[in-house]
Image 1 (spheres, rainbow, N blue to C red):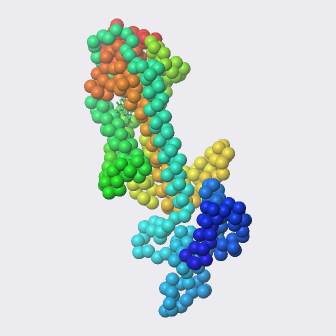
Image 2: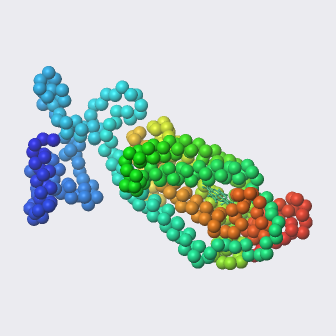
Length: 403
Ligand code: HEM
């Protein structure tokens, strides 16, 4: 940095610390007085999170015409100081030659990615964390108020097969991989903040590397589980008229002894199923584009389609950007991947609760596959009737679901 630039920054900092009145004066000073460097007002605007016109830096990348001859002292930089060269790199105006031919290989610093970095380090972590903690809090509250949802009627001692071995395998492949992906993903996002202070940089480097490796590779198990579960259960998750009644009665979740009729899956489970398929599918696709950097850009094309449909106008927003650099594509993919994952994690936390401690008799469906008949009649009465009708068990086949 040139001497007068350093001087200008030092003076700025001094003003900030000791003399507000003088600082105000400096803030109003034209840029010429700082020797073309940033002013105190620029610094203050940036601190307030406001837009700063940085063209004075963006364009200050040296003057080739003033360059010393290549053989002269300081000639090698072509008339630019180190700061000027770095500014040219940062703002994408440097002429970079690289031997690697990969997309964006010539981008050494990407100033346009600062918003992504700040969003990832700030709101993404904060709101994502609150979402998960909020869901855990809500479930705790629900447990305190409603307690464990019990089987209301007399247990029969008989069981009925709810999910066969292959269905349970598909479920646990999906569930096991999702939990591993969730934990390793959170390590990547929150590790620097919460794990480094606990175990130090050295140990965290190993944890982070292992986490990333596991995350990248376990993703295939998740995608396979997703396809299996979709094929097994899609037919049972198509909407039906019973779903409306179920939703109007909130599934009886908030009132004891209320059991709206349901087939194999009730409306609540259908919502879980479609969330898993749609959000899990979107996480998979954006994950693939992160796994194969720059190979599967999809945001510019998606934004163009959204603009064509006028989605931005419905939302009262400016058109989405249709021209994205390779790095920007990756940044959108990362944010989308993380945001959708947070939403699905919150939904799945609720699912895990209701499938285990939250409801008596539910876990067996995915444990042994055999559920207590009374549980099945209360929660899936129409399905029990269907199964028994198929088996020719006449009396129960006509049974109406408990209300
Ligand atoms: C420890 C974790 C989990 C437990 C204890 C659990 C438990 C269960 C149980 C008991 C059922 C059957 C409900 C019934 O019989 O009606 C079920 C179904 C299902 N599970 Fe899980 N599950 C877990 C994790 C997951 C994860 C991580 C996913 C997806 C990412 C998932 C997706 C599903 C889906 C789509 C269904 C069918 C729809 C439904 O019943 O909600 N599960 N789970």
